[in-house]
Length: 304
Image (cartoon, rainbow, N blue to C red; front, side, top):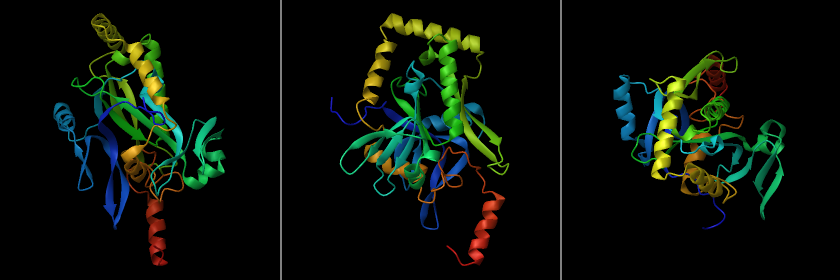
């Protein structure tokens, strides 16, 4: 195996709650109040919708897609959700510094150094570069490819914290059968003082509709037994993923990084991202009254 880059789960599509749109000649992130399931192909700057997107909308009888039935790939919660404090170079799109709040790996002029990581609030380097939490959640949609994942990327504290808790809890109550539980991504909204009481949206993970928790655990045991009888080795799959992640310093690399930076680390996002931020951030979908008034005042002063 080639060394120096992480071997991450195969991605066959994307899940998002926002998109990048062109405004005044600039491409900027725009939040949404529903999921989109897309392929990895772009046409005219827009991600092409995956057939699952239309199928789930029809099945749900609504134009708004706010829940997605899923399973996860791995029994270890930390393999399904990868989250770190991350800083990217906006010009090259390359990761510069990635940390867990204890230690970080940072690119210098000569090498990748391991340094203390005090989190973005306590790090002058992170504050200057727009460091923030960045998570990738891998899940399986449908039965066509049980080893191919749809990735949901986010810089939302709410989404990362909620997904991490749910994965840990479901693993515990099922006795380690997380990978066979019928689950569902669910979009939730709430209002906070920081959002000026406008709704913000984040992603939760719940038991799939139509199942109680007890029924979901029973179904997980049944599918787990079927897989074991067929020779499916979940423990070996988890270990292969663990070794793959450990093969490189950074999970994100290659041709996808520029699109990630455009969506989650835009140039006008120097304060951590509240208004333009990522497609699953903690800011309101609608522009706040304060932001509108500030913008109008700036226009009157002749400021850009």
